[in-house]
Length: 397
Image (cartoon, rainbow, N blue to C red; front, side, top):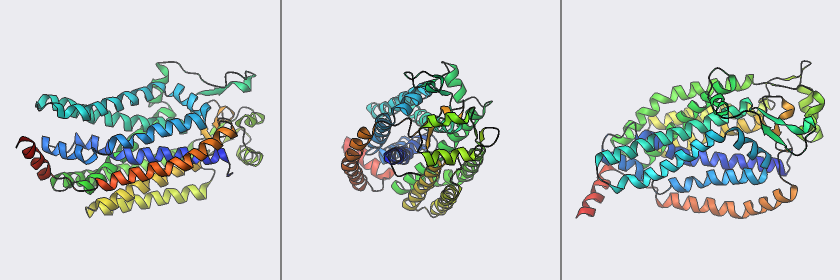
């Protein structure tokens, strides 16, 4: 692994994506739980108020991650938005409906009106979590992109070969490996955000809501662990074929990295266990993720929301960086062959662009993190049904 600008920016983009899933993840989880465990309008308001001051700020991470990927790795951005266009468009619509639902729900006291927006919050939160997981799973398994430079066309760059609606259907097609794997990762992502949301509710609420959230976590913890083990096991089986060994030069890798990968390709032109080329690091991270999941379970049993939130966050961080090290230096593997893949080198911007961006990131990222930390600190207090009832009485008094 090289400590150069493409690697630094691959790490930073991974951090931004992790930041989005950790911050918006728990309020997506609360949005799903809001439709599962809240029985009265007061309870629904408690759950929504628990994320009210932070949910919109959390989505800044999503925008920042997309912007950073576009500027640092334009080829990656172009390929992903071509191959995942419909899925990402649905995610965008779901995020819009979710935001509108939060704002419109309180505009009328009519039960039918509020039920409509409650359903919108539930389904939009579920769709966002599911499709983000589906996208990640499909990317890891390989998507059908071609590097036209291999065929002598130097202007087109990387192109996506499937057309709508086949492009979207194949993302969720359980009869293909990448579709099946994408669905499994999608389900695992939904389970994770629910468990992450439970930790937030244990931290921010009390009484029956916290108790019901705890019961949900105790029921879903084992299914999540099973899905995590299955997804990790299947990731170990992922291999990429190379039609012509000489063409891996189009990955644009440093010479020693190129030689290292070439040495792992067998006589049949197959790179086996392509996502486990740093087994010591990855196995360590996988074990740490598993231990964090156990720590989460213990914290939930003890109704310790802060500790549960810490352990659910660590579970994802360790699992997420296991994926980072597994894919490195590939950014978007191609199902047509390893040589057609986008790496962090052949998909990166110029050195000048990456340098200027790094300086800006070093200046502004700490400011954004400090501001968000301040917001969380200001609103980190318990919300109960009694406090909501008092607010209603004061409003009508």
